[in-house]
Figure: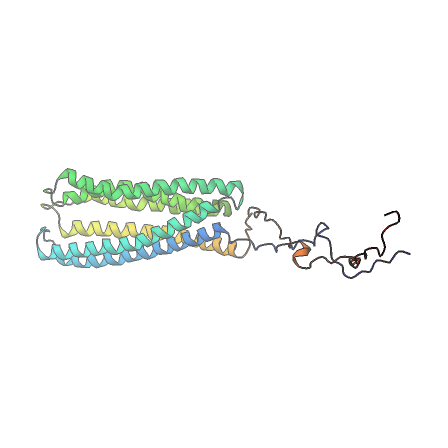
Length: 320
């Protein structure tokens, strides 16, 4: 009778079906890059408001100094002139630092908008492409404006007195007009996909205001030319009034942009606009190692005991 097999252990063979893979949890959606870009643009507008408010304050201070001149002619080398020149240099330095902060915020927001340009459909993607073009043109003309003014001063020669300021202002103001137009169009185009038609008109109006403000300086330069022989306190006061008007126009434009960006940002933050994210990359699911790694296989039947050796025969075989 055959000996029944004794089951002494059990384990899944290494070649059998493995356990079910552990599914990875779905990752949370990444934050909208477009929302972050609009937030950075909004902060850049806030910096622009602060810069223009500071410019109006400092121009008013310079105007108070000029008011003490009366009807006397301006001479390039008296103490009052140097005091005024120092104030204007301080105005330029402070405005330059604040403007640099705004430019950095603008570039950061531009990077976020470009990265998330496909989050809200093809219309938004086309709008962001226009934003990139307008921003590049605005940066080019913004760099060319002071360079063109300096080059004009060098071309006119340093012996022309205050006429250097007029020639430099005409060139830099003309290039600044183009810079303001393209920067304003970049701000307006970034929100085009999220605005009704009425708000789009407001954005274009603000962009036009940014282009008009440098043109005011050009008109003032042509209407009230500065020259060491004919310039009076009235002429310089007219220049300062033009600078204050230009800063006020920029201030109005930035306030309009701030209202637009605040309204759109809060709507996006509340979930009114849902971004269309790209599908996440596929990961290979995790499979545990084969079962022998955890449990060594046991034999289903123990090996039989060894057979004892046969003793040699006691007598020689027959016929030996």
